[in-house]
Image (cartoon, rainbow over all chains, first blue to last red; front, side):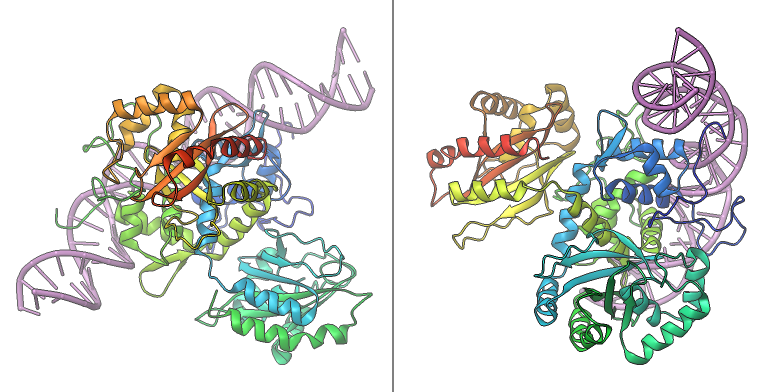
Amino acid sequence: MSTEQVPGRGSEDVTGAAAEAPGPVRAGRTSAAGSALEKSLRILEAVAAPGGPHRLTDVMTAAAVPKSSTFRILAALAEQGFVRAEGDGRYGTGPRLHGLSALVRAAEPAGVDEVLRELRRETGQTVHLALHTGETITYVRKLEADQPFRTASRVGTRMPLHTTAIGKSVLALLPPEEVRALVASAGLPRRTPRTLTTAAELEAELAAVRARGFAVDDEENEPSIRCAGVAVPGPDGRPLGGVSVTTVTFLVSRQEAEGYAPALRAAAKALAPLL
Amino acid sequence: MSTEQVPGRGSEDVTGAAAEAPGPVRAGRTSAAGSALEKSLRILEAVAAPGGPHRLTDVMTAAAVPKSSTFRILAALAEQGFVRAEGDGRYGTGPRLHGLSALVRAAEPAGVDEVLRELRRETGQTVHLALHTGETITYVRKLEADQPFRTASRVGTRMPLHTTAIGKSVLALLPPEEVRALVASAGLPRRTPRTLTTAAELEAELAAVRARGFAVDDEENEPSIRCAGVAVPGPDGRPLGGVSVTTVTFLVSRQEAEGYAPALRAAAKALAPLL
DNA sequence: CGATGTGTTCCACGTAGTGGAACGAGGTAT
DNA sequence: ATACCTCGTTCCACTACGTGGAACACATCG
């Protein structure tokens, strides 16, 4: 292993697109994970990832793209103005990406923050809105609780589906075969001692979620953090994402957290037509 | 010409990437305008453009990409979750794009709004921040004046370089050869009776801009709208974008508008290390 | 009911992207 | 100083991938 190439699986990176098959591409992939576009987009996301300008190697591991390809694509993206090549070998977000971001922001449905503010008012807790993005959810909005308790989450970061309240509420609305496919490709990596790591546990949990109409993450994603979440369905019934209330275990009991369910359901219902 | 293909030049679309040569690609292009990535990115921008979900044809014209290619790329982007294919043939921004946008937003330097707010406080007028994005500038931030006078501009929209105060202040900092190249490829389309439409006029104007250190758009972009703008240079001296103060002609004289120059220069100077 | 528009599918062609390997610079431990 | 990393960058032969013109199906309109 002289010249390092793309690593099999990147340590404990949340982003990890974890290729399941080690060898060359299996024949009939559901959606071959290797077109130029897909690589470029993953790289774009990796560049925009939290934590300042990133080095080539980091981008390459995060995006799971071979080094030379990463380099070439980064150069192309830089030429297009979507990433900025700093003097040293680091890359940051480019002006055209900021422009696109502004564009997207402007296109975002109004009234969303309204609903989230109301939810925070009712609960007094930190409130999250996340979207379902493939094998992960992506936090797109966060309203901090009045209490100065830091919650580590940041807007823009991605989290697994099976460890978060929003993720589980999303999974609960997905057809079982799709859940199985997701589990097969992303696995059920452990994040805390309480993370559900077997398909059986997860299935039982999802049934429970469906039964009571909301999901609870009881220190399954982050120690000392307990969340309650409800999915937001799109017009076709498929879950687009979800809202959640985040609490610290030593301040809010599980019962109290579950008490937020009505407010969460109301928020999700209000958000459905907006998303 | 039965089945319509990509149009030579798209009416009066601001986006227009206007291919100069009508025939097949000229041999030695400075930076060939046709890689898969570039097309995809243009399409992505077109989809995110203001005005709800767009139809395939609109996207294809805005991005200047052949119809079948547009369709294929849109399908790919949709599969990746970057665009959402509505039931009918329309396409909107997808969840993963919103996630990316949130990511970019989070990565955006803090303190920018601070500076812009101060500029608005000093001038009492609508304030814009735009980034230089190729043949256009893209508004990324806008602070409305206290006065309830609607200015049509929207965050995310693009404007020509030669008709706007920010655009001209950017051009003034660009090497002359680059200005000539931009003029050659984008032209100098007229937007109002006062728009500068000849290379000679523009060059003289840019010299004046350089002399006095700020640019003025005197109803050259929009009737009844007068702006003053200053470029924000990057670490290498190249202009990244600019700030401007927007006024209505019947309330603010040209002299008054020019009086905002010191505040604008201060804002630009403060923004330079942040962008 | 033809005419014009749309979104979608097909396919032969060749360009444009691919990724393994080698290179050289900078850094850090030996 | 020397050996050994790891990083960013360049090169190149192979072929997969994207290409865009044309044909198709379905609307809407006059």
